[in-house]
Length: 323
Image (cartoon, rainbow, N blue to C red; front, side, top):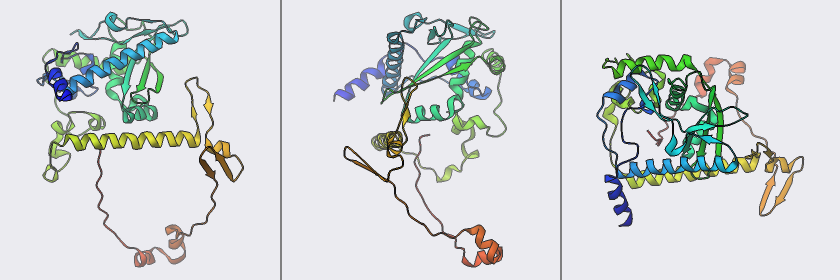
């Protein structure tokens, strides 16, 4: 009952950031930006408003923690700077600016799920073209162009609160072509869909709208609303992935918040065969495995004989991913 009441309340609650077209709506794909600008912007559901508010709270917490650490921040919270891009003056609001080594670059903060946080650490902004575009457009705005040398991107894993950051250089050669097509779209210009899917389509929320059966045969696809099962699967995957991350750190060590390496269990084992620590046993296990090399088989008996011993098996699997 309580949860239903909260969802009903937030269904009607107006966000401090109402749906609309801003710098954060710009896609690196011209057609994606065109769709974001021309499609009717629906009101958010109660669950979406709760998620948005949670993200805003966590970003405020990041700002507070950076200040608590001793960094000097400006233009944050209610005092965020409003910047504009291009001739059409599309606006946006960077999260702030931070004093580091006597310089004051821009600051962008994000709170992320485990999957997004892990992708960020592995691939950087290459996994998040929307974030890259947002940051570069802020730095290419009328107010900041050639006035900031870059941006500190600071991310927080929502569940473990583990932080991660890196510096992004200003790149006007990336931003300026995007600003040109934003001006074209906002001024009423038409944008044609690409002739075929491009690389960034895989990360675009419009991919099914754009390509539909052109990307996949829809006749074999079923659509259902199963929120309880979906939530259970996501929660299970979180515990699985987070557990794997903790086990990997325990095995091989990690780098702490001060940038210092922490040795793992394998390093503690060293050249010994057995390590006992608390209620764990770390043991070196040596074994031999017998296998047949396809390459060596071909070298000895020839490629024609391979067909005589080879078999083909159809394996059917069920794979679940977030769209």
